[in-house]
Image (cartoon, rainbow, N blue to C red; front, side):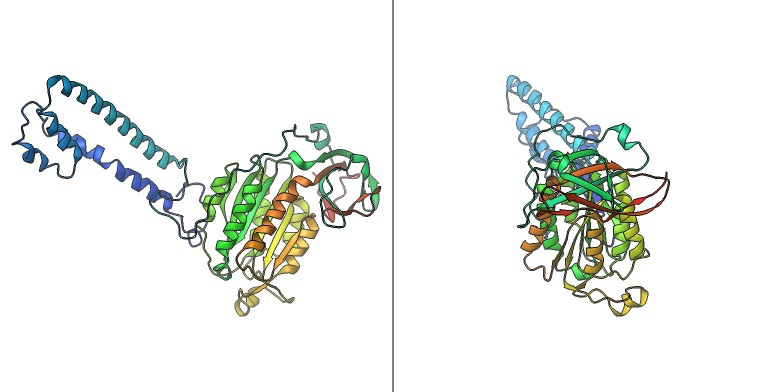
Length: 433
């Protein structure tokens, strides 16, 4: 199996498609391979081949245009024959080289087109690939200095500012902000408007059985979101049901993410906590200093080994924005451990309490769709997330006494504009190195 398909076979319909692609390409090359034994069995004398002998030559090579072409050459003049032979040899060489390259590409898994589909087969739920996203303004990327980042107590947070109508405010300056940690003001060591900052994005999609009628809409919504991301944004794709699995590791090839979406299908229970925990762990491999997760689910956790408390603790430590989209009615509070998973399997309720807690804890947003419908609202929510990322600020500071571990509350104010709303993570988890 290809190294990029790290997902349970029960959930990934295309788990063996790459092997089928290789096999199909090998079948294309079979005529070339079978030509050698025919040549070894005896050469064909082009000058002695006559119309009367055409059938005898055609019989063992029935269905092969090569034999028919060779016999036609027998009635041509020597001058024409020479030119034709040279041309045929050139074409044969080019065809052989092309077939060989195709097989090598199939074996290496580097097809320039959709790596999980064959040219003659269209997936029933396929959606058009997203248009190539437009790059953000071509400005030099601002990064905190290495000296600042390497100091103990370095903390970096993402800040979102909106006005009373919900419109993003993106023209503020560093001296407009005040950072308060545990109620004490901290000096800002780095400030950036994120309009040109690339992001490491993780997409986590629920593939439990209750999503069976919603996956087509989810594919379209995520495709639309990916299409709005910056080409420099790296993305990974994870899916979960009875367990979580990485479908596509971090990649800059956004079309690869869209291709992988087409082969996911619904299966059994919901391991929501395990999936988010795994996604946060995968973020350790991110190459960008700004990082965000998108979680799309329609159910309650009824399978995870991890607990809600463990997931929230991990979210605090990783400092990753966690955007969440819940599909369904808001679920009443209940125990969702082992017995709850048996007697209350996936239905039309979604654990918005957990999703909202994760988003608010990390300074992101949460969305709730009562019904997915035709998927337009889900697409708008996904697009809203991709549009928000370049309209934020990054602020960094040094937290005092970094040797004292613990959780410290965080607040960011815009003193000159108290009418503005500021969204930021609730706190920072200090972990001594």
